[in-house]
Length: 305
Image (cartoon, rainbow, N blue to C red; front, side, top):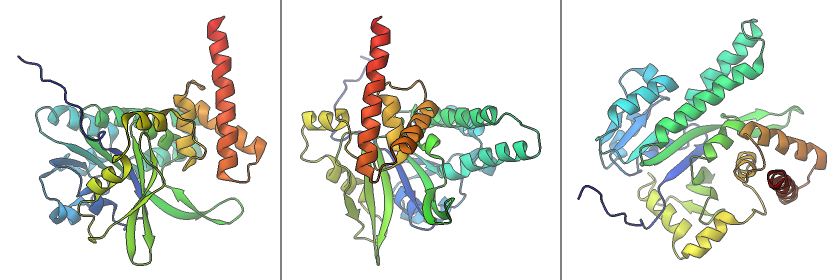
């Protein structure tokens, strides 16, 4: 018989994102993911951690341009993934793929080549969609890496920002089930679980080996061990009392069916934030969940008519 019997795995697939400052150990962490691995090496530095990988690591392409262009990434994966035996696709990093697209849109606007910013942003959205489809379609584990950076807001206050916009990260959230962040406490380094679709969130797992050895397995055990199937379903279904970040909140609103697109959800989120001026993350979550619930009910009523 050609068909294989389906067996329920112990844990969900590792569809993870990982964020941290440059040099914090994101690529070193990626080397510990299940192998064989193929790396979309957009930062062109993964060879520095090859010795830490226990199984085979394959390059997407020897051509640097193939690792940063969404069209080329898609082509290389479609040509080479079937029958490859690859178990994990690593995007290192999403920052290096999306940033050049954003820069080109801004330059085109500045030089008068592109007056319609919405058309330019649509190019970015399509590139993100193309990349997600190309990486996520193979039934493998996926690790999406992107960077944090320090900057200043409009009031010159120091803030920490992601190098990928909240709209693109909200779109990415549709393709992942866990958000991870590298954290530091003195000489200790660990991973904080910002969000898990059907597991525990808010915990920190510390690296006791200095090279993330066995860390993906420790994360899975911390997320899921001891939870029943019903408890996992309840975590996924329940409205959050707090969101770890704006992109998770925006994607949650979109997934609830309250908005026609992620961009529309982002605008709705910003509107509620400006209207209610929440003092805490819990207040913002409460306002957002209330608004999304109201919009969902309105949509249901329109459909019923």
